[in-house]
Amino acid sequence: MSSISHASPPGSPLVSQGAPRAEGDHNVAPGGDVAPGDIAVGVVIGRTSEYFDFFVYGIASVLVFPALFFPDLPRLEGTLWAFAIFALAFIARPIGTVISMAVQRRWGRATKLTIALFLLGSSTAGIAFLPGYATLGAGAIVLLSIFRIGQGLALGGSWDGLPSLLALNAPPQRRGWYAMLGQLGAPVGFVLATSLFAYLYASLSPEDFLAWGWRYPFFVAFAINVVALFARLRLVVTHEYEQLLDQRELEPVSTRELLSNQGYNVFIGAFAALASYALFHLVTVFPLSWIHLFAEQTISEFLLIQIVGGFLCAGGIVASGWIADRHGRRRTLGTLAVLIAVFSGFAPTLLNGGTLGQDVFILVGFILLGLSYGQASGTVTANFSPRFRYTGAALTADIAWLVGAAFAPLVALGLSAHFGLGYVSVYLLSGAACTLAALYLNRALETRA
Image (tube, rainbow, N blue to C red):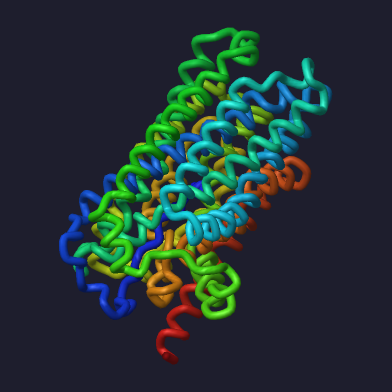
């Protein structure tokens, strides 16, 4: 999503409330003083492009890929297979991070981002031009899987350190506010992707939409990602940013060294965001598949409701910055985990409640998502010592997306279709429990230290 940002997709690791800043964090390299607002622009650009690509693929996994690549299977089975391929990028993303860190250590940040740009553009364009099963047979499914893995590897390699840099340069009393800025890329990317699909789906006949209409969002995703990665590349290789990144010790280390010395921080950081990441797909991709397969509401109407939800999510993210600066980021995230747990109990009733109930589920879910996701990524990333922060933040976000969101649409749809919607509640509740447990463990370790 990234942490996410990358979400990872993308997550934006940020300094946690109350966590001590590392020695030297208050300094700025001479001649390298860059305003936090300037850094935030780079973060938002990167996250918006990643999330747009993310949601274009997710929506296509429901509306297009089952019919195009699995035409001989029942719609439910075809959608489950499409969701399985959807998850491949999340599996590949931490692998891409490990490889890209090695590339950066040997050839530099610019080379790493250039490779990521080329791979992401090639993979997205490949999907846009890919013929369906009727033309290539099983080869079409294999190629779709390869391109999806390529997207995941590229997103792992696109980590530029800007979210960590933003966290370290944010004013102490405004850390919650700056924490949420990068997260705004999620609702912006979602609204853009959903709006484009809604327009094409409503304007074209079903035949034209499946034949060529669905390809246009991938062309747009290709263009946006290439422009965004070029913009970030030009930003991070400037003298001022390179000097500031070096001064903050935001350089890669080997994954083995990271896990040997501070693997527990990766584990805690990944699970601290689980409630938000689990909810992420359960109000975006999963409900679209449920409506498409089992509900009477039209897809065009439902996409419009989701667009409204995206705006509510953006408002929730902005509000989370104000709340966190007044009450603390850890407390904010823990409180939202409890509210998500409460919301999980109403999920089956709402999703089975016809159009009104489904719309309420989406709108309330997006509000909770905004409030929690605004402070979710990297809440405990400041636990990393300066030397391990760059690689630790990237890998923490990758694992959080993998554990919390990669299989959410597949598991939620599969269990709900075969055993009932009560399993949506179980999935959300387990995510909330993991978040609360991780935050408690993090606090206990800080107190012991």
